[in-house]
Length: 491
Image (cartoon, rainbow, N blue to C red; front, side, top):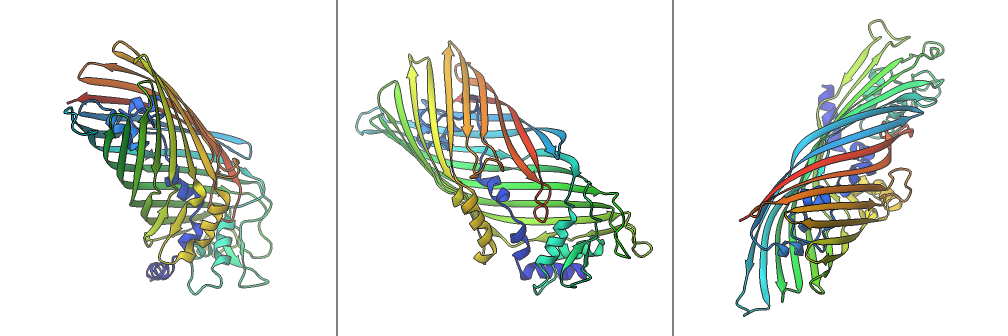
């Protein structure tokens, strides 16, 4: 009966999930990783005016015109995430690696050599890119000198005290003795975790999933000088994160007969899945045979997302409780929340490429993205009003610089690149800037090519152990090392 009531309560109101959704949930989709073919990654994605690569059309759709023949490629990547955590001076480290099919696509090129029209070339491409790989693991441990995770349940209970329905997270905390009504005011809830600080806490999380993009591309050229292109993009996402938060204390028992909680285990599994749409417009102008410039626009991505949540709560070693309640547990049903919408910000990119002696090139891309325009929506806009306002104030316009180079020695190609991406936050304390380097090599067999690249990037950010009630964070240094292999063929 209780589970039926809980599901009904969540169907009545979207307030509880909207309250716990954070800016980090939006940035999971607004901030894209640099994935794609080995050639693309070997030059750190600096392809806005280069073209001739299937992943490059995601930067500038006009780039598909720089293929000389029909062309197809397939890419596999090894993704490695290394997370170094510092929580109140205690350091921990977790590594995780996966192997994934990262890209597959083809382009058809149609040329008119008759000279009857100035629009002498058309290209049509279909490409899939894994724009974000969500596979990751993280472990955080340390002694918190002042704050218990029980404050999350206190926060939840006091937040819903005057609402017409009973939030299930309040019930979880109450049934496991983590919270009780205050002796002074029964409408105010307090923690049963004994005060005094020195709370040992550890947090372990795993995440799996992807954010994929299927691109349909059409481009055409005018007098082999001006190249114009458009992309229509279908986005797909499937994300699952599982976390376990543990706390232990040995502080003196609470006074009188107030229950005392010694150990807490809080398990969460959140699944997010959905789809979206976006489009790209791009142009490349060939000033001469050596110099090209490009400009591109990427629209916002309009997502429709769904969340499913499961939570389990356990307490152990409870004191001053009825016999048999020394260990308590509360398991929630699977909550399926109403569909909601997310709009990520648009992006503009300016590019320039210089080609020397048909043996090498150097390329520079500068991109701009205003993360303060990120916005959640659903049928009741008030549910996300505070969060959208928070993102508008705390997020900013960020710039990204990509520099890449390539040099050919007979059948061999040598590549390198650099990438710098500003934090999406007004203050870099929450998420820092990203710096990345890459290198690659390719061999041309004639009708086919094999390319290999290595990319490294690092970024620091703050990680919350729980979404509200306790503001203490761990400092994480995330280092990504990726090896990518692409096989491509002319046909």
